[in-house]
Image 1 (cartoon, rainbow, N blue to C red):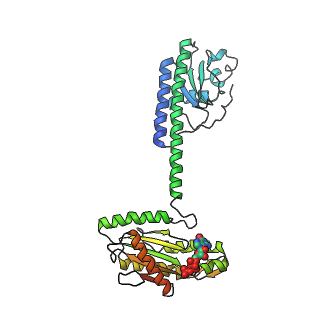
Image 2: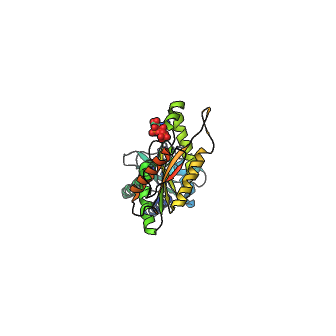
Image 3: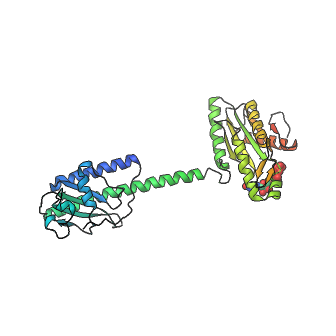
Length: 337
Ligand SMILES: Nc1nc2c(ncn2[C@@H]2O[C@H](COP(=O)(O)OP(=O)(O)OP(=O)(O)O)[C@@H](O)[C@H]2O)c(=O)[nH]1
């Protein structure tokens, strides 16, 4: 009778606090079992070896219980030394000379066996009808605990999936920056924050020059690769507190909280220079890339809301394109676009 229990996957709470709380509860169940039946050990085992819990005092009894085959119903061996199956078990014939063993399966909500409650003693003893009913009650408590554990695990899993989904819903899948929805939300938040703090807020709209030609010449996948490379250069040009997102196809929006018009102009110029500084290797070809940028700052448009600020930056971008591209234009109240 030294077979290993079948492996049944039991969802367990992986969060440390939850796991500790559940383990404390299991220890409590085991202590109640020992008191209730006046046995040396009450051990709860799970088919999934990674779950279940025992203290050092129970290690031998736990090892014994885990070495036994899974039971389908309450099974009682009143004297293991006289039991045809257990008598030859090394922990019965030798130390620690286990004599009494009773076990009853723990079932999950779907009635699958996921573990067992065991009673172990070093003296032979009887097991009354009252004991049988008490054992059923104890198993019921263990099953309820297991149910709570799996609910915790499901909740944790859902929370993780939720977090991943939320993140995915904010990130552009091609270039890995904030997507339009996310960068607009960041702009909204920073706009309120800067206004409250009495700080300026600047935005930059950046657009790749002649991108259609790149697509037409090298193909759409190469165009995608260009977008990724340009994104990386733009990101390396901003400050820690700034954010860049994909505003449109080949258009980016940078949100610069606290940046005055001069600082924003300098950052936009840094972006432009970073892209134009050296050609990008796309496949076999060295491709010269440039961007045009329009900058708008709240210190020049104090009454402008976030959307209006973008409108001003957009118009400055058109001016940069008109001026021959590969340049930065600052939106000014006195400018005619
Ligand atoms: N490869 C690729 N191309 C894109 C993507 N999004 C938009 N585009 C392309 O970007 C090109 C934009 O072209 P235009 O609006 O004419 O702009 P442009 O050629 O950059 O010209 P200017 O902006 O005036 O310098 C179009 O050919 C779009 O198909 C994308 O995700 N991947």
